[in-house]
Image (cartoon, protein in one colour):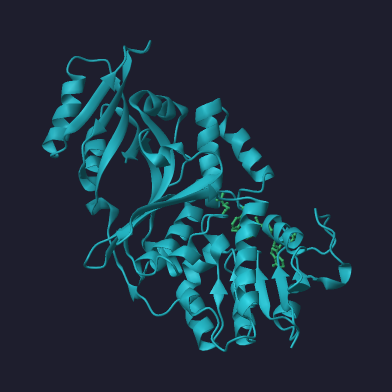
Length: 418
Ligand code: NAP
Ligand code: HSE
């Protein structure tokens, strides 16, 4: 057996390049082979031509490789490569949150069947160490609540639009250039990426499997600059929040959507590409982990941590890293978003007529919704008025009924409030 851990990497893009550059410092790890889509593509790293292949099956079938590091993304063909690698007795390190969210159960069952580990620190919150702490030092806790900012791209966009008045398109292009965004940024801005991450994070935190299809999701594309300005005036910041709670009957409310976060709350001050994860559990109470959520080197830090964790134990035991494994979980019962209670921000354009505010108040009252503030500043030139309402906690189904009954007004935005 070689005295070095022999790895094969699939993908040499943003994350793969960061891993390649950073691994040069470690003499206990040898990169045996790297698979890419296009061998001739110019890259930010110089890699010996003889270790490159454009067929990842060469790598997952290579008997001289101990660990496959999957950094290409997506479900297929990544799943086929990982499945073959596990069946060939290789350990896996991956940053692929989509695959974990959609195929996690199959993946961990297969890895146990073949007595191999799958490590995925980089898949959730980039450079923040979160999986390893939950699986090891926090293992004695019953975690019941997560509130997090899990997507660097959207947090970067929202911060730049708010703080610098930048346009959505310009900031998104900037996030792509900096290597924060997914290959198709729809995954970021429509909340899929954060939904993948909270699926896995909630599963391991609650020790109860969350199904990705049960995660409620809204992205940031409908957030208007006017909403940001108004939120600021009212003492809030708008953030894309991934949250999850579980009750004693295994009912899990797991979701991703924009929220008005009070400026007094810590998550309101997590800016640009920074992510943060707030966990509540017993006996620890509340804990927050924060750090860079995306980008070449922060993500490489997590991938390398996983590779080194395997390198440290490789060859010393038949059953590697027992605490990092995913054993059988119960499956949580999903909670329908319509049955949840939240506070809401409503932005309404109404005709400038006598009694319009009273009418909004009356419709809300008829649905058992109490208002915590209602604001109108003057009248528009076209004889309409911008009215902003913040409700107290009420049923989601009821606020949607209010929106559908405000027939002579235009409801510009409905955003949940933390
Ligand atoms: P990327 O820059 O688009 O790189 C993807 C790499 O995969 C490229 O090198 C590409 O080859 C290769 N690839 C794609 N399809 C392939 C195929 N069929 N066969 C062989 N190679 C293939 O993506 P990335 O940003 O590095 O992200 C990689 C993974 O890390 C994704 O799962 C992503 O969600 C995750 N992640 C990214 C970040 C981040 O900040 N970027 C953070 C955490 C997790 P070519 O270079 O030849 O095109
Ligand atoms: N596209 C992801 C983000 C990369 O912006 O957070 C990190 O997972």
